[in-house]
Image 1 (cartoon, one colour):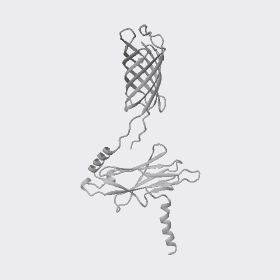
Image 2 (image 1 turned 90 degrees about the vertical axis):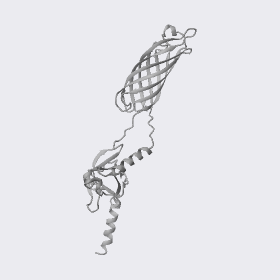
Image 3 (image 1 turned 120 degrees about the vertical axis):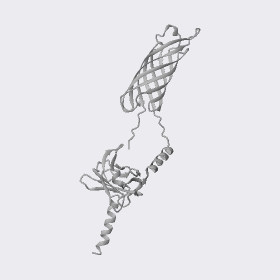
Image 4 (image 1 turned 180 degrees about the vertical axis):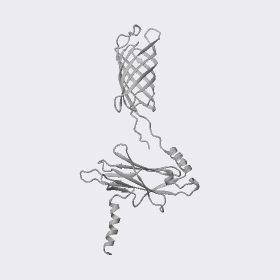
Length: 324
């Protein structure tokens, strides 16, 4: 019996280590089989509030079918186990979460009663037949800081003040055609680029070009092409690129170069966008404006120009943000 005792002790020590008993566990891939890895999502606990523990699991082969999460608030009371709930995370990541109610974790009486200074957490992942695949925190459980409500609020304020601001800029491109009456080029092709100022506001610049054809009599002079420029501010009723149709209103400043001839103006355009794919949307808009037409040898005069625009919007899709 004595000779067998060391072997038994070594077996009991090495077995959990071989199963990946750490805060971030990995089972490395075997030939022809993808590997499995898991880790705890960072968390803290606030006295009087529920505690939610989450695991991020990389499991390309779908081996993991079940998970349990265990929490220890007092060594004299033992571990409290919860069946984890599964949901799909971003990409191939699987999320397993377990929630402990405030009455389960905290002693009755709230802040007036001595509460644990820390919580310990561990987890186990199981396969299709109920066999243990991966264990996290068996020998070295995750230590969770316990904060009072005042400490949690102060921590949130500090994190919000020190967190780097993300660049919200999302570039977009436009391409389309326009029919515009009252100018020297009634049919035009256009391209545009821009970016968002807010989720529902974009700043855009367009370049338009069209052949001179059947212009109004007072604009009979000019070269064979009309080159136009526009700058606009487009406001949407819904954030564009979110996969839903949206209406927009677009005031603009523009100018036409008739070569010779320079016609500045301002106007307003309204339209609708429909999503065609993840990063492509179809738009149809009606608009018009007031222009100051300059004619050689004659006084400038004001006129109205307007028409229909049809185009495609590229890019600018909003990233998917997972709510936690």
